[in-house]
Amino acid sequence: MCVVGFQWLPGSQEPLLVLGNRDEYYERPTTPLAWWEGGRILAGRDLQAGGTWLGVTRTGRVAVLTNFRDPTLTRPEGPSRGQLPVRFLEGDASASAFLEGLRPEAASYSPFNLLLYDGADLLGYESRGDRVVHFEPGIHAVSNGAFDEPWPKVERLKEQLAQAGKDLGALLEVLQDDRPFPDACLPHTGVSLDWERVLSPLFIRTPTYGTRAATVLRLGHSKGVVLERTFTAEGLGSERRFEFALTPESQGNTGNTDKIVSNSGVAGHV
Image (cartoon, rainbow, N blue to C red):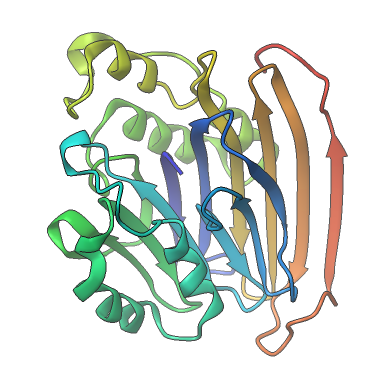
């Protein structure tokens, strides 16, 4: 993901609401949101490196990844960051234990942010500072900087999340906000000013690079709902909605309702 907002309400009937956009080159092969082999993980998949950027399990585990934008810190020879969410979702370690195990190897990856929910605790991790983040109840967001770092798109997403309520369709519309920000507001992340402008909105589109998927996840104590809208260079791709029961021991397909609406062939900005 390249911008993620989330509402954390521990102790409530729906403790976690997550929404975010994944931005990527259109040519990078990807499969949309689906249950992976074995029926444990619901996620999109990067076919180039095999990982994911956002996923959830039937047991209520959630993992979300964003990259940290600084070209000077990129490690092209390092392992794929997209494998980190998969490792967490495939395992049963607590978020805290997983991060303790990850910290000694985190520097081998290009910098990243990782958001983990184990069904009880929500933790963030910023690899370039080896920092574990504990969140107060409320609304938070992250893009390609630190958690809650006040980039314009981060602040806009937090404001819009507070106003949109829990309707998944309305939250998806928030993610399609393509309004750029003035130059004076933009962060300085080591890319050109032209690229800072291109990357400034919540929803990004260029001829070769842009928002590939917008996703909203709502997680209660007994049920999860995920809605994803995908995009191609030509416009809207498809929309998929999944509802599933949260059952700690279930690994099969029992309890989920998959509703898929294909919109491939719809062109233009949405």
